[in-house]
Image (cartoon, rainbow, N blue to C red; front, top):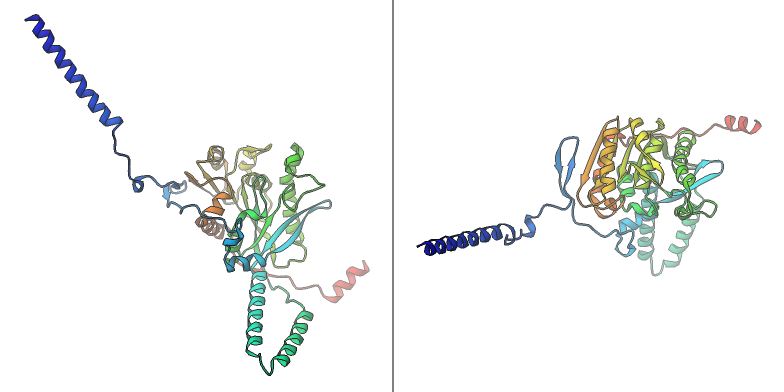
Length: 374
């Protein structure tokens, strides 16, 4: 009896253990994987102002400006309207950049329309009157060439774009054009050591601590130049109303320069800022910023993701933070997710409305004469 009882208990234990093993296996290893549509969106974001989850951005797209063959005709028209400018920092330093603005854009579109009309007229005039029409067209071109370009009558608030490390003025895809269409002038700068702003033959790869620290000083000098006299020869730029948009390294440069409280800076956008990068620490500067600030970061870049939350708590002015799961770093978020561009434009319009101001009248002949005598 004892052996029979022990045998029965042993078999019962084996059955119980086998059943428990099956249950455990079904819970852990045999779950049906979720369908693709059941996965959470890769670009979910939270607006810390409201606590609401932001709508997921679309799938990554090709940057047309890195692949010119994908540019639309409108892209090419907008791009051709940009003006290369030299922006004075001080008596010994000048940075290069592209200027986009509504005035030049309208002039370019007018020029293209006139060229299209002339081409159409020339085509319709072929035949017996072809030579006469051609001669008249040539005369018209000569008259147009002698005509002086109209003087701008309006000035537009200026958005300065500051790229990341090893970047340049090319990094911003269609953002400058979107801003122009909403009534802003846009200056896409090459920071020192990058692009057209290689100073004394030294690019960022040869930089030491002093070179990195000079970057915020450069921007501060540009802001002073803009406030005093604008960009040389560009009357349509309002240097008294400036928005800073920085990505990565450019975000740190913008924070430090804006912390000096220049009256001309009306708001600041920080894409993937960090607490410290290349010796540019943003902790103390963030305390002093009082203008509206927008911070955008992706969890795929842990440093910028954590730093953005720290800086958000330090900022004393009106502030908004947008945290995403997987959008990349810095200007990549703008280049590859076009809806991010629209979100940034909408935010800028609230802090610095695109209201044009009047261009000051030209100096009178008496004033000019007095200046010459002095």
